[in-house]
Length: 251
Image 1 (cartoon, helix red, strand yellow):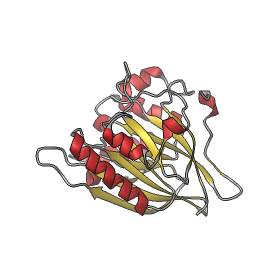
Image 2 (cartoon, helix red, strand yellow):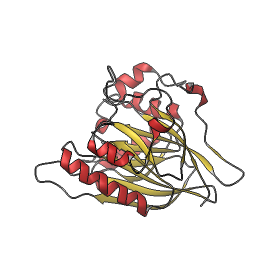
Image 3 (cartoon, one colour):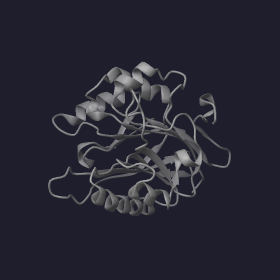
């Protein structure tokens, strides 16, 4: 397995391609240690953060803004308008397009949605990004997986979906996504694999998926990454984050 210090840093290549660091993190509505949460995010040095379970009720914009500021990032899209998924970014990318999508809802189950954005890095590298949090119910989750694939196709040849799938690699929805996309951990494992729960992680239900044109340089849970303290991972939220380094070709 690649040493943690070897995950590539953000950069733009001479040919116009871009190395992008993307973090996926279920933050449980910021109900836990907000300082620890911000420290973990900052230590991962992401260009883009796909958040799940962002605050989405009373004064949610204030809490989203506070998280962005404390993590030294900026709000891009999502939150209550996507029923939980949210996207943050550094100042590096130019935001070309955003759209929040609410998914068909099964009566009695939670409303789900996608936060989506098209980000340009430098002058030529464009990356479509979807932050997602799929259903706990199997059949609804499978249908949402199909909608996620459709959304990625609409974002262009270079796109990534990141989030809490509520499904494991052998699950039907996970396999549906992995059948058409690159599963980041399976493609270029780095760090640790399991994401839930932090004190005794035994399952991988959070993942980063990329379309075929994106090169996955490394992907996994940043346990042991310099600056990422175990105590912060344990107190920040009830999931572990997934960090990926991706090379995006010029459009």
